[in-house]
Length: 325
Image 1: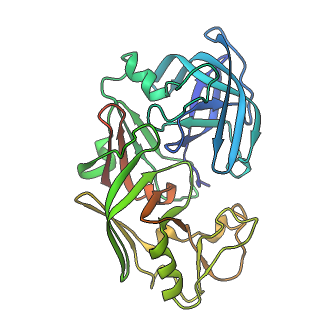
Image 2 (image 1 turned 60 degrees about the vertical axis):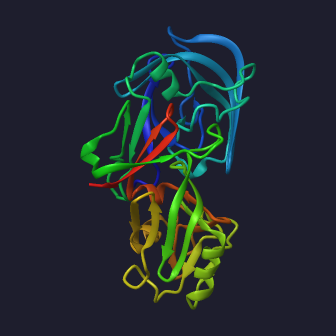
Image 3 (image 1 turned 30 degrees about the horizontal axis):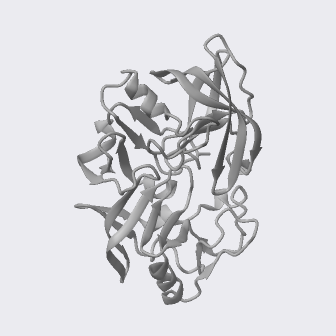
């Protein structure tokens, strides 16, 4: 059952780490979840430690340099973390670690003695393993089948989208997030125009919405409430009354430059098959992935990125989008 975007890579003592979470919201590569890292013939001891904090977790351990291969992409002497302490990732089991694909420079002081740690993408490009400083992400919608998503290092996969890519300048400072300015927001008659700050984070599930518009949605639809369960993985997300379904709720529409992304209501509704996994209460109501973000702010979590092809340029500081094929 796919509710996270993961990949596999080889490192250590010829080890294959099969369940590594792909995350555009962080920028560090580490393993040691279900399978411990064992140094191999290509491992270089650098006498360093690492530590990374996340919105809902933390990890630390020993840092090495190693030969890391993801599919046909290989980075030599890539800094990789071997976790000795992990907290907060129980939702993602089975779970081996995280491949952070955030922008260069966004992992300050996460390796001891090093200001910023080169990301996997930076290493690929600096070593000439890829010609273009670009990677593309295709994340398919929820399915009961195995993960069929795709990362393209060094370019994009044109078979995964239609039309041209709409490139948007990355917001400054560049060394924080894959942030950019969206051009509009609409949910039914609830709208907002720019400035609308946005970012992508495929390592999380929810779609975070502008605060004022989020609470307009809460107030305008009778019977709507918030998920306030302390155990829920979707705390503060909208819950609609049982009579509000994918058939009568409007799509979520976000302007991306000249491109209009329309996420159908079904794309933001939690399927009952995931209630137990996400600790969502079985109450007959319509639970969603729509949560409050902040003033004039949208966060494209996995549930938004399932509906658009996204691509990232680490040198020219661009974020691109195209409608999925």
